[in-house]
Amino acid sequence: MVPFFQALSPLRVLDALSDLGLAVDGRLSALSSYENRVYLAMLEDNNAVVAKFYRPQRWPQALIAEEQAFALELASQDIPVVAPVVLHGQSLHHLTVSQTDHPGFWFSVSPRRGGRQPELDDPEVLEWIGRFLARIHLVGARSAFVHRPALDLHSFGQVPRQWLLDHAAVAAEVETQWAQISEQALALVRQAWDAAAVGQPGGVQTIRLHGDCHPGNILWTPTELPQGGPHFVDLDDARQGPAVQDLWMLQSGEREERTRQLGPLMDGYESLREFDRRELALIEPLRTLRLIHYSAWLAHRRDDPSFAQHFPWFDGPDYWRGQIHMLHEQIEAMQELPLTV
Image 1 (cartoon, helix red, strand yellow):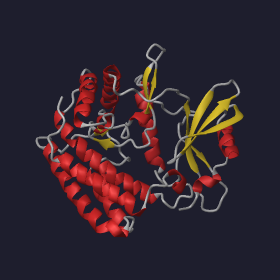
Image 2 (cartoon, one colour):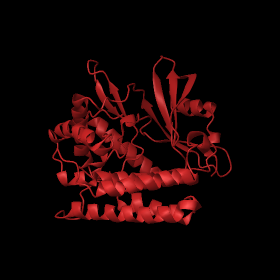
Image 3 (tube, helix red, strand yellow):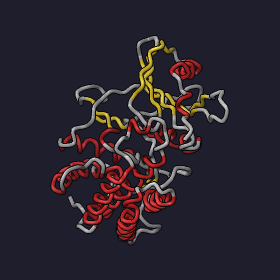
Image 4 (cartoon, one colour):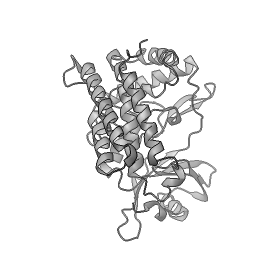
């Protein structure tokens, strides 16, 4: 993989922001992000902005623009999504790099938002998040993505599985075992998907989603502050998919604990938007798809110069044995009755 990000020096970042008319004062801090490069840039008035430089050649311009348009649409409805700032009539900008064969960088600028991960053992927090997810989905259901991919068995399961096998990405010692268990798991995903689609013209209903709504992508601020509560960040994986995708990653622990968390989350959600309870049967299939997709995502990036530093545990027989074990667990979980509230 070409080390594209080596061309993104701090000076280039500051120059790109300055060219947009932002009065940067030279203070620049790299924020935690592997897929893209994200920086906190201080301004002369002591305010700050967050600059996000997208990984070259991951998403075409049209897909990034569609993500940003969704974020801006949500923000226009007073939904607390951290959306890009529109500068000179656009939210997506391009930094050209005078280097042979370098595609340059698409980037955006957003306001700084503070906060911490939400306390998901607090029913009031879960109910609050559920209400805002319902509001996100009410907007997401108004229209469909044109360019961004869907989250389904094909794109999140079959395609990444086949890529891993075609590129000999699975450790040779356990490749056959992983191929067999992943095939069994995807067969159960298909069964669940087909069952959830019964009686629905066109199959499982899909809407525009956050797509990666885990606790790390929700910033919680004290409710006694103005605009306190959750702020949703990072729509980089926004996709078309079933509504339950934005709910299941907010649950953790054993079945009893996950059921307890699901209750207030659904109470908040259903106070504003109807939820098809049949989608609860897709929670474990979606978790299974995420496991396979994530392994392929990692394998795609293992030649990146900084990959070993961020993911030293990836690759080798031990990693894949762990994946085989988790897929066995998912096969068992997909054969249990779905969660109910």
